[in-house]
Amino acid sequence: MWHLYLPIAGNSVNVILIFGLGVFVGLLSGIFGVGGGFLMTPLLITIGIPPTVAAASDSNQIVGASTSGTLAHYRMGNVDVKMGILLLVGGVIGGTVGVQIIKILRQMGNADFLIQITYVFMLGFVGIYMFMESLQGLKKEKVQSPIETTPKKESSYARLIKKLPWQTYFAKSGVELSILMPLILGAFVGILAAIMGVGGGFIMVPVMVYLLRMPMHVVVGTSLFQILFTCMDVTIMQAHSNHTVDFVLALILLIGSTLGVQFGAKISKKLKGDQLKIILASLVLIVMVKMLLGLLLKPSILLAYIGEH
Amino acid sequence: MLKKLLPLIMVFLTGSLELYAVPIGAALPIQINLKPNCIRMGATFDGTTIFVTGEIPVDSEVLIRLVGHFGDTKLKKKGRALGFLWMNMGTVEFRNIPSVFLLLPSNSLEKLLRTDKDRWQKLGLGFEAIEKQTEVIPASEDKHRLFEDFLKLKESTDLYGIQKNRVQYGKADGSMKTFTASMSIPSAIPQGSYNVQAFVIKNAAIVTMAEEQINAAEVGFPAALAFLAYRHATLYGVLAVVVAIIAGLLTGLVFKGAKGGH
Image (cartoon, rainbow over all chains, first blue to last red; front, side, top):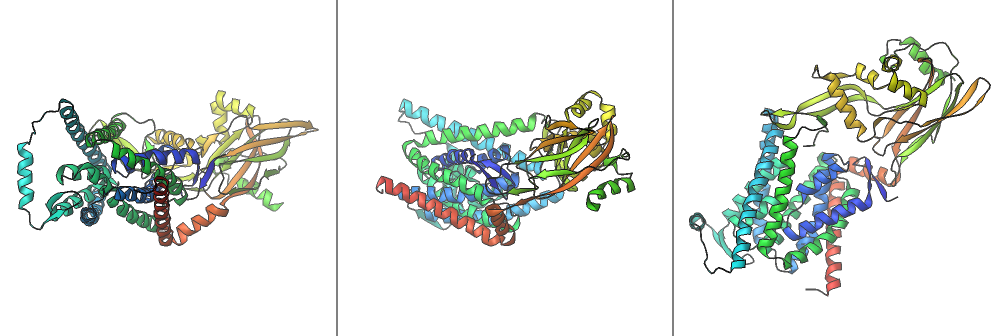
């Protein structure tokens, strides 16, 4: 009862469980503008889906969830299309470079080691920085201190980005930047995403907040917009080259996640920027600690299927 | 008839085969029946049960096996990096190992397995026989440890395992008694052909055996979807994306409608 056989995954799954996972990850996607790949893929592996199928099918469901999420955020005026396209172009260039880097690393051996260490450091750095920063923001708000602190580092960074050529105004985000900034940062996230095998939403969000100085609500909508196109590309490539997209699995997940993402977008609007950041930071840190424990504790089985971390 | 006898003839001719390490004594061949005689993996497939029936001499016991295709399996091996980090450190290959291996011993044989390991191993029908004839690449003194981990990994998806209390005997009729074994087929079983074997055992020695083939195949919607995914991969990928976008847009519209628009 409630079981469905998945031909590409080669196993049967409980429909209710998969639907529930979809709703949960969709909620996170709608609230924070992350694809949720860094959470969903490990959860699917835990319930017996082969790792390669889990990652590829997750990309497929993210296409649905981010379409729904982008639409919801677009209606609220939260999508900076101009910025999103520039980040996307940078991301595609970075992704291509990243795939080549991974190829070289694999030839040299021990690519897995570098991937996992990159994961832990990136998650740790992003999580701790966001957590501390938003905690400070929340405290300030409580005290209602009128003093605005502008760290020296930030102002020199601001001066540096003002010197870059091709300055343009991004109306939705309300910032003036060189078009080189989103292109370079998009490429940087693309490289990391290709190396780590994820959509990169959880790196892209802090990059938009801290380096592009975009307001948090526009960040969420724009991030979803960019993720939509990245995952469309990944799904078609994975289906074409590796036959690892399980459409039935993706469909159940996306029915759940498209519902979840709508509620998520509404919750996101109600929460304050710092509250959003601190919850996302906690989530990133939990995943980081789980990965770190996985690296430090001796596993009960010393063998794993290929594609599993 | 010749088809039924073929496995026995093969066993006599290839006496060196590890899986049948113990020579089978001269005895009447037995017959087994499978019900159902094929595994159909449709949209609601969640594993199934195959009933294996037959007749054996009253003073003997039966052991049923399901053995999958013999092939090579590559897995990642976890090891210590920098002395304290556990991560994937290269690959291990198990050569000539079955994809699926299920054992259904009668209660007496299950007791033998637990209490008299030496006599059980001499039968050459269990995991030990598989371990013996499997080659691990790169060759390692850790072969036993690696094989144990391989077993744990396979047992986690029920593709390897010992199914207990699954063999029931009927009333003896003269010198013979009937048996029925209910074999659980896991939902993760790969498509392909499998051998169902029945070994008749007396005094911890194999007397005779019978073998039947069973086929596992996807049917209906899963079969059509797999056909599209493997034969028209790009079209499948594009369709998957298009349906996902439509589903996303539809949900968006439904929500907009419910709220009366923004």
